[in-house]
Image 1: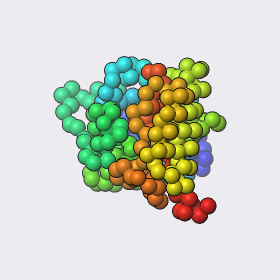
Image 2: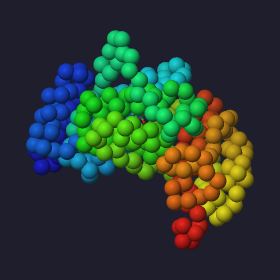
Image 3: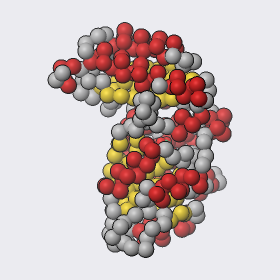
Image 4: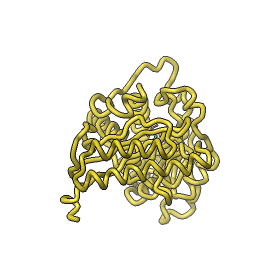
Length: 296
Ligand code: PAF
């Protein structure tokens, strides 16, 4: 919302594809730049931080809420995904969003839809291995959202580090002309990365979930101090199982740009993790800096 434009206090809610173009045209009428925050709803403070950042980067802010069936490789996961549209819209309005588009699946994927955006390389390991088809679904829907809304900027949380790498690659390859920005992960007081999936954790599971960032931070410190990554990651895996995680899909040291595994910390190193507590699968990532680089 633009405080210099009195009388424009309410967020515009668009459900019909036909209404989107005129609404965006009116919104950008004065030549304002537009920043887009694509979401799947079930909004938390991490999403609202993206909206706040969008407001600093552009004259107008739009968001989308769409639980994208194409990116769920497990029908149960899609069915369980939290949905809270009314609360989400209130939060977006409060955060200063100007326009929210809530497309229906048939608007984005009309009868006979047969196009798939697939990004090779960065999408193939980690989440790509464990969730076949997931990144095709993400790249396809993000390409469609960017083409429909034509923002100047689109902002994504760094919590989904690999997703961000896939979207950057897709945008550069297709030449969509949208600046893709990452925003640092927002965390709960105990370090757990904010995620819509956290709402699916029972109270005991929620307490146990803090073992994930704790194990990752401990391993990152050890690797940064020069200990062999293999050893630190093995201990972290053991700490997760001891802390109540039922399954660790991966816990890896990678180059933050290519997502290829590395043995030592450098300026661009990230630690990536995916692990489950019961039926809830959590992902996270952090920077891993060597003591020499951080100067300490
Ligand atoms: O990160 C998400 O919420 C989704 O993957 C995205 C980028 C909105 C695409 O559906």
